[in-house]
Image 1 (cartoon, one colour):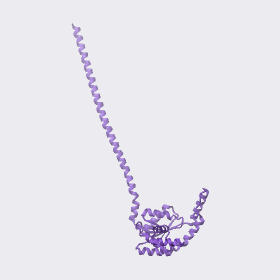
Image 2 (cartoon, helix red, strand yellow):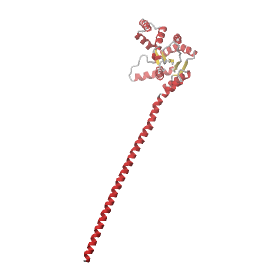
Image 3 (tube, rainbow, N blue to C red):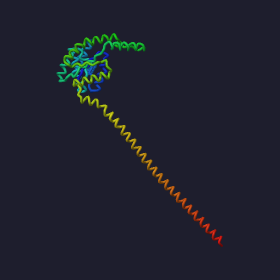
Image 4 (cartoon, helix red, strand yellow):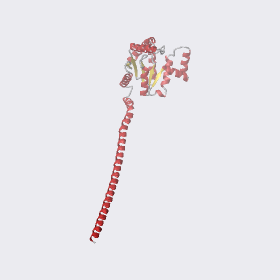
Length: 284
């Protein structure tokens, strides 16, 4: 899966990119990070970029595209990637198309997170007011004024790009003002509809949680059965004990009865004998 995420500052693009990375096992490619990594690694393209940046110049498109080319050849990008912060212009989009064609790769989707700019500004104004009230320091780039400039810059850069991808039927627009989970679901539905995600992949990711749930559910009856078996064993033991006790008690009782009867018989016999002797004596 190869996708581009477009969205102004505050649209939740970073959050959604991370969710896509975790769900589909793809990598997020940020041009800033790739430039720094290429410079640190000392690759030919990285050294070229370092030289330009050291002179205070802007890294040209061909160098950025070269860095992207090197990066998507790495093993962790074989399952796909999300491009964040590139392309920003139509010439960059054309250069990216040419690169992907050369590598026999296809761009699956361009997802635009559309937001209500006045609502975003209102959010920032509220947050800044609350931070000032608490006596917290407000970042210089986190003010309504800075956001207004950034939104205007994004709009002027992105509008031609949106038209470019719309013409090529690659663009999908999602309402970025929805709740985070709803935005995630909407992106997933769109990727499914475009064929960027195979239904079986979707089934696998949906089923990931199922075995754990199933195992948990299966554990309960097993536990209950174990408990019941234990109870049955205890009951059996109790019955056996009761039987033994009854037998013992019966034996004891029988012994007592026999003893009593014997005693009685002896007593009776003795009494009878004594009576006989007395009678004999009386006769004499």
